[in-house]
Image (cartoon, rainbow over all chains, first blue to last red; front, side, top):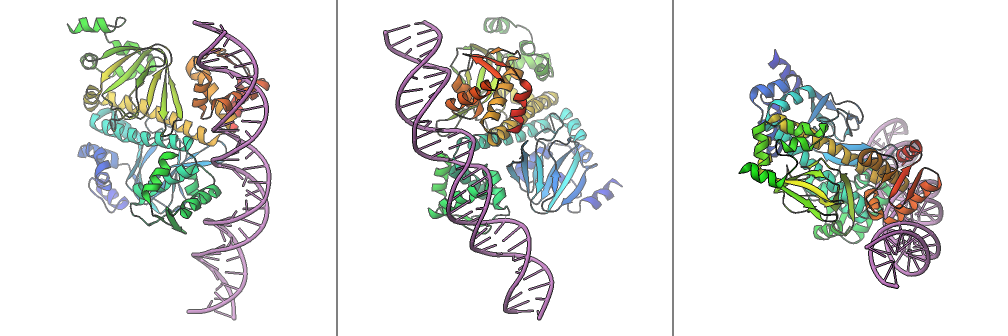
Length: 241
Length: 241
DNA sequence: GGCCCTGAAATTGATATATATCAATCAGCC
DNA sequence: GGCTGATTGATATATATCAATTTCAGGGCC
């Protein structure tokens, strides 16, 4: 019966689903769970599909579940008290969303919105807590995972507050190429507004800054395709602010 | 012999030192350790005094130790590739510095500098890791502790990037009054340069912004004494950016 | 299939504003 | 009494804002 519901919810991964959902680096988190423990977690999971633009989790709601992104791409957005948003990071498939309140104050501190069609699992956070309290290896791995995300956030904070626009645009472009798409001319499924929100500026400013880079022969772009022609110089611009 | 060295290093707390060093909310982290485990941690600790202005830990060095602040006040500073700094937070006594690389990539991602005379313990991070891997309650508590710090960082990020100067100055003042000094006219042992670095602006801009608030009758300040006269309005300014 | 229409997104331009920078003056203190 | 930090002022610069224009994909229609 348990197996049946699993089959129904999640066709591609009957056994040890969540382990297999993740590539090596992140799977280690789930690998620290015993088969029993993993089943305990999976038992209550809800497999849900979101269409582009749909809100997966919403800032300020309570963290009844944590989310595993299996397929697709989403953006993590902090909404400020005034209307403006900041895109904190892009979540590719195989992302685990446990930071920002899930293991702390039970309130979500950011919104996650689907960029492409997203396939994900919602898993009861109560069960996560129970396992964390019991399984030290699991807690330890999650601690490492969250801490490394914080370091990235710290770096964003410094970049966004200390760099001028060209530096911030460079950071965004390098991040997309190296961390997200991992090919060089990359077909970017973010619009200019979103790229601007990643860079902490208005879309007009982003466009102008990008054009500067284009005139210097450092990047090239056509609609949503972006190519980095001179990465060395771009890194230089990122460094020098 | 072990006891002797402890006595020598840390006069005020022979037994269960680290538990007693922390107030309730944070002690829970160490309380999850057994007496044996705690002794294992303490055995190798180095009790060190820093004078104002001295660097306690330095960005980009490796995280051989984690630090417990027992007494005094320090600032956590992110140094950007260009000269400018950002003060991420003020560390009052009873702070635990395990974030930012200690349980992740073994590199420090910020500098900590003493503001007043600081009394602290340096503890071998190897031992921390060993205990984290073994004691799930401990790992769980540290996870919660670190996650709540990240939430604060996320909020700083949003505030610093989305708010205008008056809002950022308001945030800094409210933070100091409510989180750090916890009295109303408070004697602030940070200079204007440092207050500006907390608010993500130059000292001149900070001074001008503070003066605006003073002219509106919202705050009052004289040298290093600062008083918030109308907190409600100040909160409003913080909210509206 | 080719064509025009339409609307959203992208881009450009002109201007306003927030903030930094630089230089000068001021205040308090060892 | 000179030195450091605080403050003020004049100016430059980065960035946002607002408005106008362009581009282009999609959809209906012949």
